[in-house]
Image (tube, rainbow, N blue to C red; front, side, top):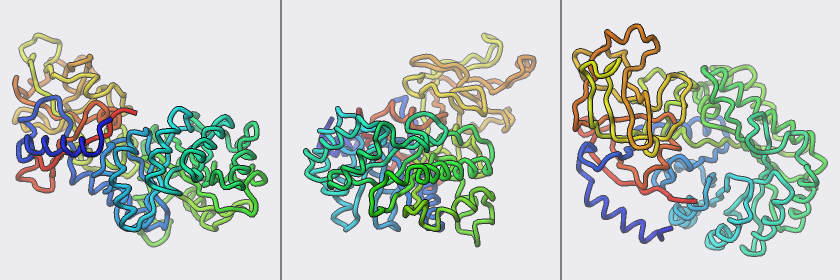
Amino acid sequence: MDSPEQIAAKKVKLEQLYVGKDIGTVPKPAIVLDVAKARRHCSSMLAATKALGLAFRPHIKTHKTIELTRMQIGNDFSDVKLVVSTVAEIEHILPLLKSLQKEGRPVNVLYGLPLPASQVDRIALIARQLGPGSISFMLDHPSQLSPLRRFYDLAGFPGGAFIKVDTGYHRAGLLPSALNKNGLLEGITKLHHKSKAILVGLYSHSSLSYRDTTPQQAMDNLAEEIRGCMDAVRCNHQHFPTPACELTISVGASPQVTSIQNFAGTVGLENGATENLVHTIRDISTGETAGIRVSLELHAGVYSVLDLQQLATNSRGITREFDEEIAVSVVAEVVSVYNDNERQAPEALVAVGTLGLGREPCPSYDGWGMIGSISASNVDSKKRLVVKRISQEHSILSWDINDSMVTRNLPRIPLEVGQYARIYPNHACVTGAMYNWYFVVDSSQPASATKIVDIWMRALGW
């Protein structure tokens, strides 16, 4: 991995080449990030969690940049809590973390996978630069206690530990009734008493809300995830350290966490929240479960830029067009157009495929990405142009239709060879992983909404 100095030097060169130019002039395919939309999403989330008095831990795996990380944490919380999916992400934002510490803001980064022994040495090296309290880990198997002890030996101070709870998604973690699998909780409690680890709390990431289609469903999924972790405290209270420490219950995924924006800031939880979520937040707000002090923390990541999967959940009940909400898009060159009955329906060929868009489905339509609004006098504004078929390095654009009987009446594709299409992704996390940097634009300046204003470097690798 490049050093921070090498990354900074690359950024300067890219800025000299591209800042001030239009996105249509850059080598394609390329990924574009609209800072105005990202800023709005980050501000909305911070305002909602602040209004409810809840802690918030942003995940940076979607964008992997220093600049958007700073937007996600904002200035209203003195403590900076983050989640990452790779060690490379921590290494990339290390200059930011050190800067925040100099500002007097404590930092804690949670490595978002059950602790892999192969990464302990790298993480300990980072931890020594940041100091005690800076790194936490997830555990869901007793064999992970050994690398946790090794981290203590290498870093010289204890790492934090979250026990991963499976609240129904079944991707990782232990069932609420079985957190002490083969003595896991007893083992972490022993390390806690010896000051070789710090039991921080319980962590659940449930993406069941990705199947939702209403704000109420998302809110109820959030309630059930919180209750699942509270049940885990009740079922295992005898195994936690005594005298009792305070446990953080950290829950979330973007749909259910963004659903709080439907009611946060209003007078009383009842104004917009479901009854289930109202009761759940009130229960945990008492500050104690089964004699254990608890506090609630929310976490989410892709909310910062959104994508078509997120909009399909309708968790916030927003009615804006998708290209007014999603902050990331891929610009791809049109290399051929088939408007003269070469196909059953009009189509266009663009020079980007799976390796530039990903291949993630979206429940709301049949396609691999949507094309942003195109001004054309002969096209119904309700018709959507989508990535209908996709290969490794190219894709086919066509009208979003399900009834083959209407293909005879479809309008021509309003694109010409040499133009570019702006494709909005189904899954922004996967799409972003294909690129080394973002071309940043700012739609809050309508006269220059496609002008590049900055370059944001992404963390690369693992």
